[in-house]
Length: 186
Image 1 (spheres, rainbow, N blue to C red):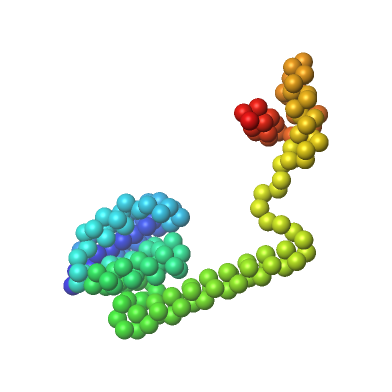
Image 2 (cartoon, rainbow, N blue to C red):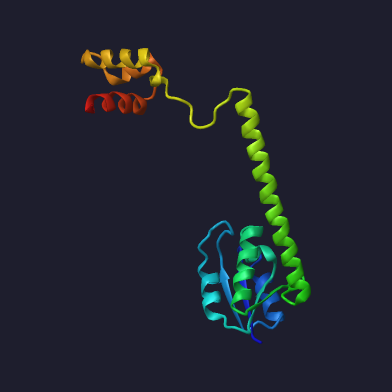
């Protein structure tokens, strides 16, 4: 069983993670020096390409591997499907039977959390609709037919600059062109 390390570091903790991975006995360590919010991590991709069945991927902390709980669980599941072990040094979690139990619990909690968020969102939307509120982008100020007609007449005048028309109607230039040009194409 070969231990392969992965570190996602900022400059301040770079040596801390790498020292911990070396002390754990990692044969090779792959590193990324980018934010965990970035989905493309070259060092992690290289580590996953390098690691083989029977090896163990070692990280300093759980948040080094996954950007979210869902992401972490998906990555651990992928490792497990390739017969690759996983170990987190600070969380003292590995993929022994106890470690697998922890991840199944995490997975169940993540799914439970998603369901609760979905229920709350749907309940909030239903309550808002009951109060007469509609979601989505607000309607444009030129969707009122009288105001749109006035904009067209002002534009047809050819003596008024578009800037003055927009100022008089209280609309942005992009809205003006969107509605007036759409009408001209018909």
